Amino acid sequence: VDIQPACLGLYCGRTVLSVNGSVETYGDCGVCPRGQRTDDNKICRECMGSPDRYDWLYLGFMAMLPLVLHWFFIEWYSGKKSSSALLQHVTALFECSVAAIVTLLVSDPVGSLHIRSCRVKKLSDWYTMLYNPSPDYITTVHCTHEAVYPLYTIVFIYYAFCLVLMMLLRPLLVKKIACGLGKSDRFKSIYAALYFFPILTVLQAVGGGLLYYAFPYIILVLSLVTLAVYMSASEVEDLLVRKKRLVVLFSHWLLHAYGIISISKLDKLEQDLPLLALVPAPALFYLVTAKYTEPSRILSEGGNGH
Image 1: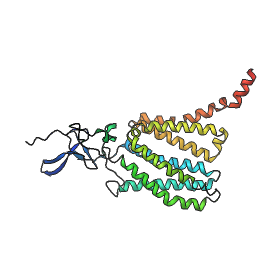
Image 2: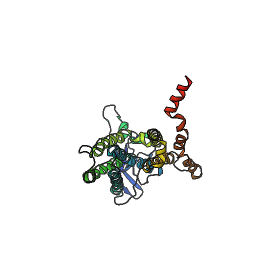
Image 3: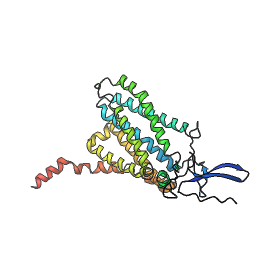
Image 4: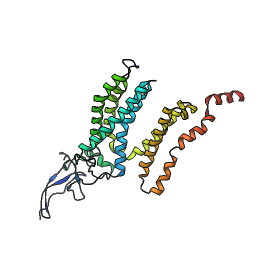
């Protein structure tokens, strides 16, 4: 029996060189090829699984980030010109949607919207570069590979396509429609994207694994905070009358729902679906209590007390 030395390291494995009947021949202990990860016996196996619901929700969250930021900066810099802003919003949605579809098509298996993936088992799967073994404390065996294939790299590919599509489509559109804005203002939402894409890329590179486990809670907290700030900045009467305000309110509700679904994963439908009834609760609570916290009223009551 050919006894081989133990394969050290959490993510090092032996590649299968040839299969003869039921007998497999293995190579030396080292890094697994892309699209493979080690099994319990330290053998590199092809990842044949498909992403589960939580994986898709994570990819959806990473895909939403640039879109939400696009919309925020378009709104921020468009001022009162709502017609030009609407066209830019639609274009941003189109860019991100096309980028997402193209990313899925170029991922393995190429040409289909399905992707094959490895199971995420623990947080260290995202950071294999931290687990390279040094058997003799001098030489390091480099076994860094994508154990969560393709959840880590697919996000970078998507961001690259988003950026390319934005640079192809948006400047032409803005030049055509944004006649009301000043020369310098009209391209500011594009400049903002040139800043936030590198930031998002670094965020995914460094914090991909942490985001994978924390994103449902990040969505809920951020959507609650932004909703509270938005509602306090706008008049209560305006909220229910102006179309734009209603759109913002409903988009926050969609984010709440996304966060709740991501936390519960909808494993037990009859138990988890009623939780979605909580989606409008923060907004309704604000509308009911807003009149009691009106600053002018508090000040006048304080003055009467004296």
